[in-house]
Figure 1: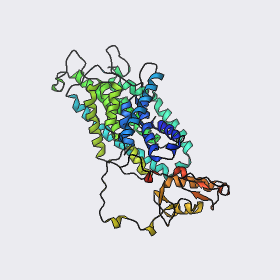
Figure 2: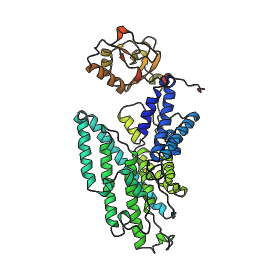
Figure 3: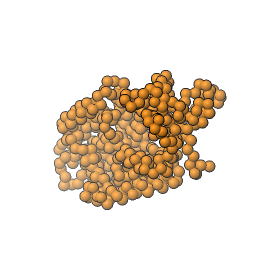
Figure 4: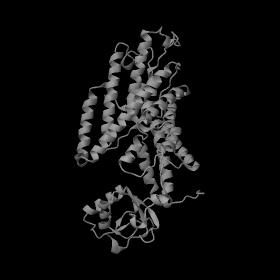
Length: 459
């Protein structure tokens, strides 16, 4: 939903010239769109704003927060009016709990955080390994065939497990739901509890493998819901084990705080904690995850266990690397990125850090041809290039990433419309292409003018 919302925001930004030619306002719009995506996906408008602040934006002024809140609220209200699930809920796995938790359960919640932290880290590494393998193997030439093979294999594997056959939203909803006294089948079956625990653990392993393979295919594939499904399966299985221990050994000192007339262990709460822990370990988000779970359950009493498990899970995952799933993909694709979690210490003088004018690799706004652009891509390995008015003045016009420039240049090279002598235009100004240059290659939509854009609120 975040991807779809940002795509809609990107299309919307091209309608109005005020936003189309202003990268700052365009990114503010995308921040608000991402907040709306989380609001619709989880029925959590506050968490949507926090997601935009914690994960999407690095510069987040007060006006952007207000716009993100308005956009997320409008999305939640629209979803409520549409009532897609016909039950009054914003999402199908929205649940409520009427039981509290005991102090001794904090140790179990910490254990879930440790387990999900390790599994989330392994899932990220496997996902990135497979993505990198695709980029350097023959699979990149058979994207559609790979999708068909993976879809067929997923269908065959999922058919063997009742927990994999169900869609992930339904599975998460069932795992979050607590058992009542009248329910004796499925997850609430006492006679087949061992089989359910084993099935949930196998489902978790298979879910991690299938999610790692699916991310990076030539189809949109998210990480939020699969991570929540994996964590909920682990948490539910863990809760069922603890519940069995209590039922078989109610006199243990560990369970001394439990009252005999009230159910002591709620496996659904353990599933909720597991889902939050797994989501935190894969994305490295903390506050957003806690608020998402709070808005899903409307239970303030479970905020402390979720906060504890999320903190432990993120700390364990950070011990093996600071980057989450999204940051790792940015690094894998070679995009310029400065992580807030990393410390960048540079030693030496400013003269050693600077590049001489004669050694700079730049792109002229209106002085390049398709041949010179292809030559530049072959002879340099930079991730992006500054766009200047001319090599003599070096007045900065913008920035273009290597991937975008290579994509446009490669399409033009195989096209019959352009030739090696076709001029290229990188200027972001309102330049009308003359008829004499009908074959001019236009790079302007991919030039980022943010480095030279100053907002009205700049001090």
